[in-house]
Length: 89
Image 1 (tube, rainbow, N blue to C red):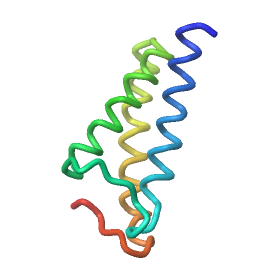
Image 2 (cartoon, one colour; image 1 turned 120 degrees about the horizontal axis):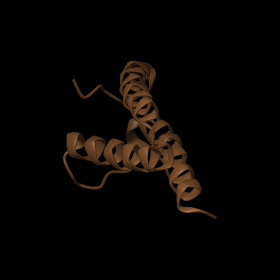
Image 3 (tube, one colour; image 1 turned 90 degrees about the vertical axis):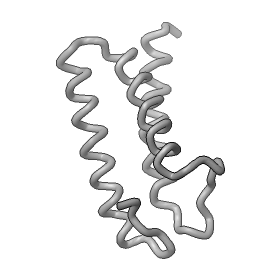
Image 4 (tube, rainbow, N blue to C red; image 1 turned 60 degrees about the vertical axis):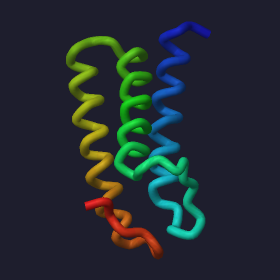
């Protein structure tokens, strides 16, 4: 498997993990003991780096950035409907 394929796989896995872990009800959520904002930043940053390494053009990088921003907003809205979760804002 090439580096590009591994990066793509890691990036897609990161997106899936972000979605799943963001929508788990409050009492069942996993935490790293880091502040919530730092956890979010690290998860999205690692996912973005993997995706950008997998899809390297400037246009794809911009699409990845916008896509992750839209995903984050959508997940914050979806968390309003998950028991035991409050949005970070």
